[in-house]
Length: 185
View (cartoon, rainbow, N blue to C red):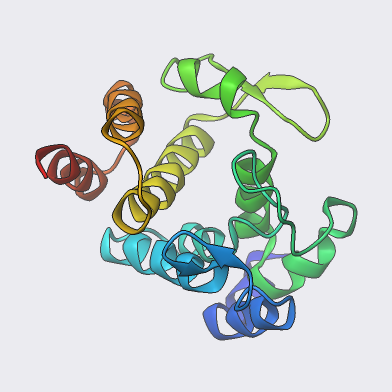
């Protein structure tokens, strides 16, 4: 898909319609339904000034399930379905996020040649600096929404905040401020 084609995509409205068709509006998730969570993550990324592809990835980040939320709305074997709605770049970010083996990826994500482990294929490879920044930004938006809407114990929150502190070099200024505000609350 070309950049020109990506610009003509329906974007958020079409993605939200697709998520509803996949029943994200009835799947339970901390803070309500999965769709409500996805919309909040999208809104948070928007408030932080994220570019369109990252916002769309935030809206659809759980489409293939995740390492922390196994319910999938679509198949990784039919990725074109999501690409047609949100574009190639955004779908690539959704796959990157969904495919992340968190245990193997999180500790070294901030390192220039940190290993990015794919839980779908079992392979590991370095991600580009932009991919690592996008992944970190999306992860922080996702986890901060969960922190705000779920009942977590303080050790879980502290663990996330400690992790995000190692990712400082990857995060935008607004994301860093949100992490700091969460740490102070």
